[in-house]
Image 1 (tube, rainbow over the protein chains, first blue to last red):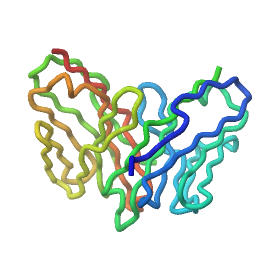
Image 2 (cartoon, rainbow over the protein chains, first blue to last red):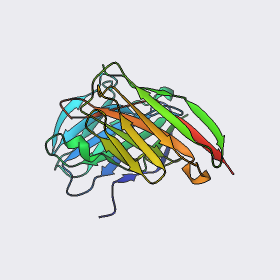
Image 3 (cartoon, rainbow over the protein chains, first blue to last red):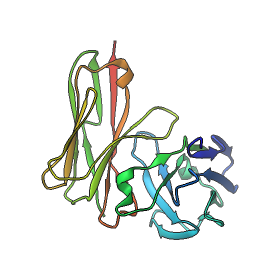
Length: 117
Length: 111
């Protein structure tokens, strides 16, 4: 297993366009998380899945954002009608499930850097 | 909402110096983790602390979890240029569903 893989690494889009990012987690990990990070800040939680179920969404996630994990493996994050404020690094992470599973820590991907012009 | 505040935000030191980074909150966390992030990459886990008062060492890095599990510190001894990066603390709530990250400490170690 090569870790968490995110594609694309970089995306430049015009304001108003839709974009979709993909995350392939570590295969044994059934929890998958999306975070957003702007320059000079720590990552902000967006949403997470356990298997195919989306269990929690941040209030930061407007209705222009949608995430799916249809078969409990890879996940996609779509942003519709992008705005300049959406420019950020979008990070995906995965972790195993267990009692107090976050003790195991997250494995992050390298992120997708989105620039909206 | 659980918030984590890190200090200092920026730190620039010479190779060989010691430093301490702090992570504070008014909330109690079931565990706390430290990550290091390099430009253009995702954060990489350094350590997880679980028990109040716990101290963990990773070579020249010493991590401590506060007795009340509300705060943590990272101490680096004899810093090296390879330690340069963004250091992030992250706390897990009792539900263990997701991590709340601090704003990070950007460390630069000059040779």
